[in-house]
Length: 471
Image (cartoon, rainbow, N blue to C red; front, side, top):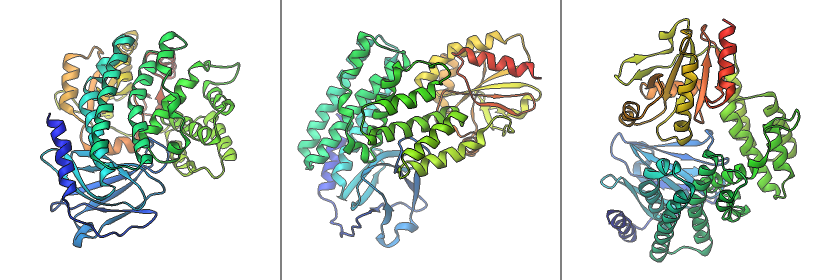
């Protein structure tokens, strides 16, 4: 009830708001965002590949809007960005020419919108709130349930989302084109959930796979792909992962990475989809495994095939950034604390090899790796030259401590990044864009592998054994 009240409160507020002067520029968005003294907010514009670090940040301060002057943001196409102020965040839907006035409703942890583009943002904030309140609190636990129970859970969630969609569309006035876009984006949530379940449980060519696959065709919409809808692109990424599930681990001397690239090139997709899938494949591979000779080869092929690709600048920035993650470099120190808030750093383990597992309580695949990490640690429990550390990337230290104290089974050193400065330094030096992830450091504090194999793979044990033999 409180949720529905919040929706209609926002609708009433925006319907009787101040009329704004039009100051539209075809390639820009004007943002008016009044703030209290010393407040700071930021808009993170996603203007290309989904879920990669090269987003553009616009800081909004009181000075930047003095005299009711707007912040002007250049965007190349319609899409979603993120607006953050304090601990409150929301997806912000922007189109060239929007003229938005935004107010922060601190009591309800929400944002109020007026002007051109307000209706779309009212709609999307309500959908986002529903997702956060109804889906995320149960999502990880439900992923571990049997498939039929999980599908039923997602169907109930989707029914609720459809009902909310109908209520909002009767309250707001959208063009048919925008209505279609938002409806397709809503469908993505259920689809993404199914794909995550399939990947987590390694579902392959079975009846359950067909159940998951049956509503995937709606995703192949070139018009939506051409715009910057990160939820839609995320859904496409899972669709692509589903499509390549049948690619074998290797074909003779052909690696799985190259096999997937060839698989994408051989599909009967339009070039706009092939370009996106290949760019995503390269991006995700770099983020999860760094730069390898084969990544370089596929990337060079991509540049030759798509010399005018809109993804090139961000791919190149990512590729260049990860060249600093090659084995043999010095391991930068990490400032951490344990569950008792005692300081911990890499320098505390002089002369020891370190296997650091990066994880978070909200990461489903991370949780499934914990029993394997326990097994890996036990195999080397008699070797005092190797130390196993679990480094949490949680934002909420209280939630992390509770999980460690109540549910943790791995007998490893449990730590979390000390503070925001430690987080900034860690992400700058270790380029972490995906978890779970392992980092292996030798006794001389040289990085053996920035992207060590997961504990569930035999390669992790073999990597540690090789590193210990080189002492």
